[in-house]
Length: 341
Image (cartoon, rainbow, N blue to C red; front, side, top):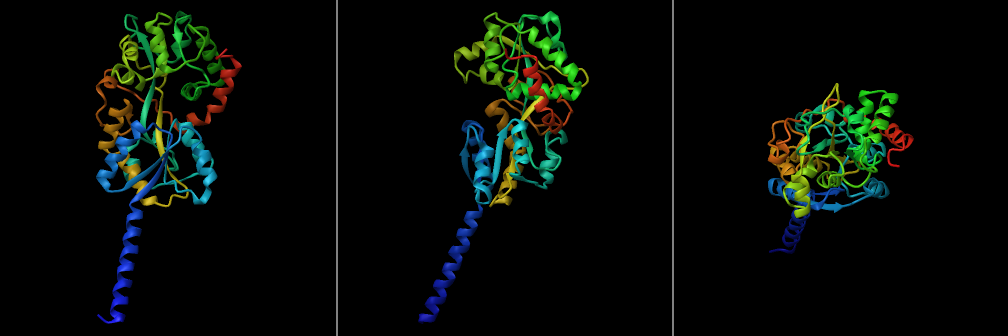
């Protein structure tokens, strides 16, 4: 082979390798998430198996927005995944996301569970429900009922400033004015069996211990407790309660979400959108339910039997974006009535 031919062949091979490397690099994406590895990893493994796209994951317990903001335009983050709609809204407010136009996402996710500008999308739901002693005669209840004096000394709940409760109080503000919400919070505080605090699972523990008759807590903890994944003690707590799905008098059951957004400077936007679309597929929505006992956001997907046993979930129709707007007012009211004191 002549020298010119050898050089030409080497150059062609180099181009092919470069092209191949570029192609391989494009088949990766970088996910930053505050969710637990045990939940996310089965979803990502299914995504990679389905699409061939590798996901490099950075798990962050706290500081997701701060991390991405500090990296600026050079951030390698493609997808930002978090729990609590407030955290997703914060990402948007800080200019860390970009809009996504996707028929697959908008057709799968109800309108009240996604950003109207398509900056973030809900991927799973957890309902704020009532845990009740099994022998308690309680088949239905409204959130408003929790301030009824008949419950005096019988309710357990975690801190009013915890995001789970701030979101619930924010939702209450979407149905009632500020004065009515303050009155409700005052009544709820007067009904507490103990100082507001602890975690949601402590509500079930304290019902078993005879400290309270009902507790306000998230739905998915019941699955985690009853399944035995948290150990024998937690299984006993979960088995000691029944779950009632409360509603607002003029609405449905309050839910919060986990969700995700495409990062503003995503180097691999196409792959990022592909991941979001996969996460609302029937396959991924089913995994959400199995891994963490959450409700799927996509209608029609099977629900874990433990969660399904609670009855039909009628999600409150108030858009989550409206609830987010009330967070500051909700926090102010918690302090004003001394809810955590």
